[in-house]
Amino acid sequence: MQVPAKRRRGRLVLTGLATVLLAASTGPAAATSRQPDPLQQQVDTVHDAGAVGVLAEVTSPDRRDTARAGTAKVGTGRPMPRNGRFRIGSATKTFTATVVLQLVAEGRMSLEDTVEQWLPGVVRGNDNHGSRITVRQLLQHTSGIHDVLPEIPALNSAEGYRAERFRTYTPKELVRLAMNHRPNFPPGDGWSYSNTNYVLAAMIIHEVTGRSWAHEVNDRIIRPLGLKDTSTPGASPSIPGPHAHSYAAFGTHTGIDVTALNPSMAAGSGSIISTTHDLNRFYAALLGGRLLAPAQLDEMTTTTPAPELGVRYGLGLGELPLSCGGSYFGHPGELLGYHTWGGVTRDGTRTAVVYVTSDGGDDTQQAMSSLVDRELCRIRS
Image (cartoon, rainbow, N blue to C red; front, side, top):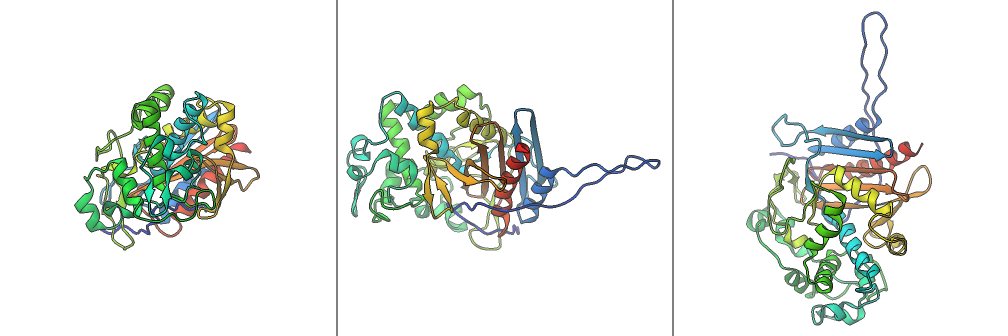
């Protein structure tokens, strides 16, 4: 099975653009042309960049548009499901940061609390020490802690995937793997994307509330917003409901089906399953002030330079410039073949989410982020 692809694990790139036309004749007497659909044009461009399947949805107060291209499974003509579920990868981090900030608003914890205070003895060894790292530094990726995902065989090669795709990891096990490495820099002295930060944040949520990260995300976000197609799968390797298959090439030119995956290695950092529609509703509610009090939303959207991503980063949320002026917030996501990028305007009124079901080609990520930029600008105009 050949799936053109190039893997960009953990670093989700941000920029791009789109083309393609559509016209129709209305009859022999007086032919008129239908205007091409800008969203469909851009989705077609993402697909042409090498993705197996693409689906996008954009919303504003008076419209909701979707477009799709490609197939739900290689070798079939089955179209992408219109509201198909997929692994949202690192977009999960925004959910986790939201729960932490809700707990801060309730006075149950502080962003300046140390990791050691809540998880004594967990972050230790090789010059790592939880007493020097704050919760804020976890959420903003300024802790210096090593990223654990490169340690996971199922995410790094076809052989590793086949051997360990059903393996279950515990959060403590993931942190221990990260502790085998020295910090990238002293806490607060740099910026480095690390999934381990959000594994630790999920563990802290458990300690503060006495209930699991998944339980809190469900009770505080998923159920109140009525995100019926969003779930925290735990160790389940399957995607419930309608979904397209995902494909990964692991740096080669041959993609394999990687839809089945135990996502326990990404609890808190990348394991949530959702849809474009549910993600748009989540982003609109978040920036619209329905999930966080103004003080906590200000904390989340106060950003610092994130050189690895070429953006600014707040607490579980990135800030990017719009080509038409101003900026928007969002978070890229990827977990083994499913790639997503979503964006929302500062006032929460306009959203755009796109995902693909393979690594795609060199220009796929660029075309995805361009779609979000162009749609947010088009809605605004």
